[in-house]
Image (cartoon, rainbow, N blue to C red; front, side):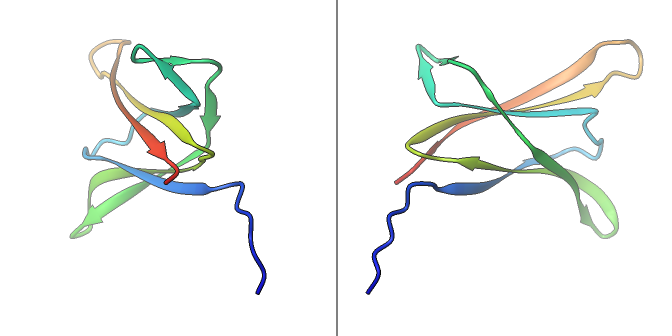
Length: 102
């Protein structure tokens, strides 16, 4: 019987953004450390796919799908921005969470 030494764990993640409006911008970043509630070190930008979720033919949400390599623990931030129709500003929403290798 062969033994396998798994040194890399690639995890596929999904974040559902519950709005019918497609985000104008989407950014997914990952860090290896957090101290005092703040990310430390350089962020890794993760490539994400954005797909609509439909119910009865209508868009009800958008799903951001991305992959992250987890050696021990990774801290993830998903940030979505929508341009306000009445001005040049953006509305921004962010989701943060940790991925553990257990």
